Amino acid sequence: MSPAAMEMRPLGAKGPAVSLIGFGAWPIGGGLGKVEKTQAIATVRASLEAGMTMVDTAQYYRTSEALIGEALQGGYRERCFLATKVSFDYSAKGIREAMENSLRALRVDQVDLYQIHGWNPTYPIEESMAAMRRLQEEGKTRFIGVSNFLPDQMERALTVCPFSSNQVRYNLLFREIEAGTVDFCQRHGIGIIVHSPLAKGLLTGRYGPDSTFPADDERSGFPDFTGELFAAHLAKAERLKQIARDLGVSLVQLAIAWTARLPAVSSVLVGAKDGTQVREHVGASGVRLGKTELERIERALA
Image 1: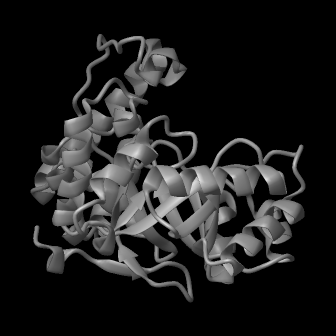
Image 2: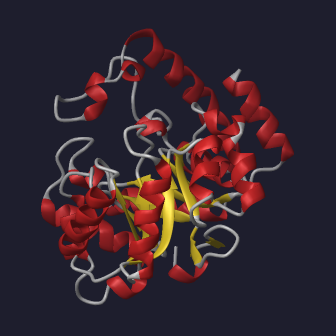
Image 3: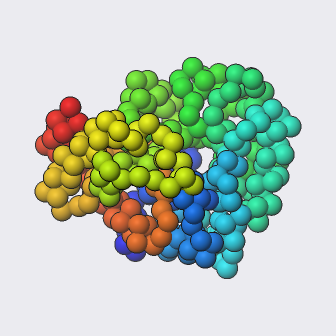
């Protein structure tokens, strides 16, 4: 896919245009098993060359910020909407220190989107958002976002300052955001950035019930990737495969396109370990699901 063919959507009601398919950096940091440095850098660049602009990382994502910082050298930064997150200490001091460390690792003076990675009752949301606003006023980030916030938490955050996005898990198997988060974001002009659209591989069609994962792959310790629960997820994926075949797309592309069907979704982040995966992901940008396909999908998931 050429860069011109990638669908662009606004980040919320008032944000800039970002690519519908974005690059999620958790895998290149080693979260799903080791990725060699040269391969990681090549994968980031392949995503930008394929038309993605959104590149998302986090303080938590191991070595990924440093890898992205290196990958963006040589003119790639100008092609990128760069997003990262503070992941641990959400105090004003912790947020500022995390930002400074991220800027150094990413080799930039400013990121495009800075996000609070999650909600922790130890740190009042109002104080955290005030710290984020100060960083924006200082020019260290263009836009503010949150991640994994529920409607009540977003409501509190909005009392301090507007923000552009909420990054949340959403896929065919895990649909908890449909219980209120989607409607809240739609009403308040907050763009949804989807993470885990492939359910960490459950929706790729690449695994069977006997598949196992090495110790350095986080999935080795997840209940969803072992035993009867793993088999049940894979059975649903197998049924979805036939729908994808009838549409002439891969299961991966079907899964990405399904999350993108919601108007509130600004970007869908997909992790990749190589350029082949990137090319498959961007192919989902032009996939449209009609009423018939959506009804078939619901039956397959029942």
